[in-house]
Image 1 (tube, rainbow, N blue to C red):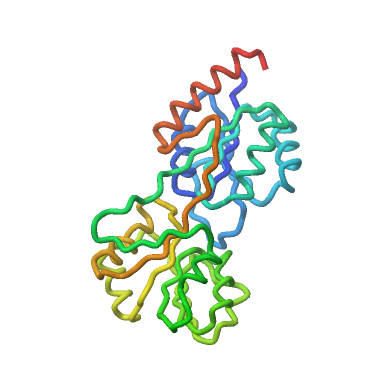
Image 2 (cartoon, rainbow, N blue to C red; image 1 turned 90 degrees about the vertical axis):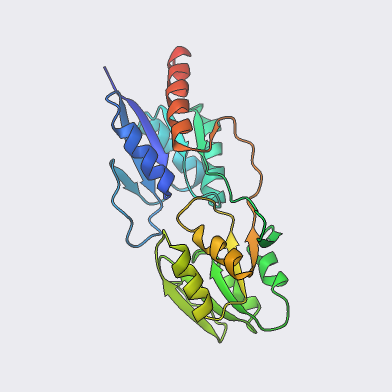
Length: 256
């Protein structure tokens, strides 16, 4: 019997875990797609495709030419473009789409959060007075902080920010999570950080900075996700595995 073919749009821990779980099922052929933006990606448990598709139309063409039965979008919660392309490609082809997106962090007593809608809003909220800012939003949008050159920035990312910021007072720290709370506290103290800028990415790998800010009483500018309605959505790998089985069974019943 032919295997059911699944394409996972990845780049997250959840995508890797889901690929491993599904790859163990004998009736499935799983491919994990990575954008290729990370210079040294971690090993993956299934065959990997690297690089873009050429927009929604290119993704739709790939789905059809490779006879994909199910598309899973397990990209980063802030990967807006590829998620939009996934929804469009699913609509074009009729191939079902499952969105796997982990929950964001929830505010607890002791947190000093200011929620903002975008990176540019975070830059504005920093204000005019010079501050020592820990920027932990990845490298793709770090250049936005050039608009406020009066601050000192500590920018942490997995890969180098290229081109670097033009702001005059910037430090770069290359590191990949997960991070320990005690190490984050030590870093914030050592660098004299006044405020943290973070996306509300959720998950455990980078949550330690939020706990460290709470322990030290530091404010956090938290960039929130845009609300998007998906027909099929999972918040955990376990839920995604169950939904994959359901969607594939439904897809087969429709005779496609």
